Image (cartoon, rainbow over all chains, first blue to last red; front, side, top):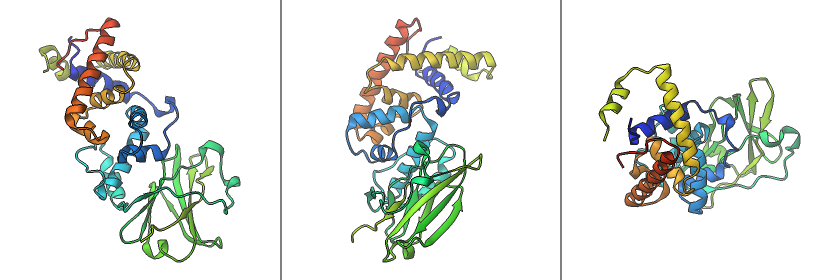
Length: 210
Length: 93
């Protein structure tokens, strides 16, 4: 049988269906997926990231999520990227995360974190997305075996302003809270199937300068 | 272009043998991909995953013509590698 494009695609698709992410090399950092979606940074690096993404369902879904959030703001222009049936749901969630700008926030050194982390298993967060209304879109990378995520937003005194448990990997913080004249930071803690937890580093919420 | 044998294969109901054959071919394709020019590999992966050249170009910020050219060259590389592995590399590109 001649090995035309269709057969190559069938064979390659068959291979990907049987592949599990667990056997793959380490995943790229969230910032690398954002850079790929934004077409920023070195093309060579983006191609390297893309090479992984195209063989990894987890990263492909994450890239789709990032692209959906960028698309909601029209940056960059979106056409027909989505292939996964689940992407429709993710796109709806991500559409809340309209991008006014991409800002990678530095982690706070003022908040105690060490005892809540478990080495490389810590939850990775994406850069905060600021909506035109002033609300903040918070999103994080799915954690393997996670059954729920607890999102906490605290002020500088350690008082919890938000303490919500969600199954999704995104959350929209209302503008009234996000723009509060207080120093806020957020963390997300994943509860795993065995009952253990892993947390993200705390990220300071800094509204973009007007 | 899809030949008659391919049409027959696609119309045939899936069987364990057919699935195994496709997966085995997929593994050979993956081996061949590992040996092509690194900058073309992700482009070919996207194409094989079902994306069109317009979408590839859009993601990478290229013109469609550039994306098409890279896919063409990447597939040609891939077929050469497959031929070297004893697999019929004829195609419709």
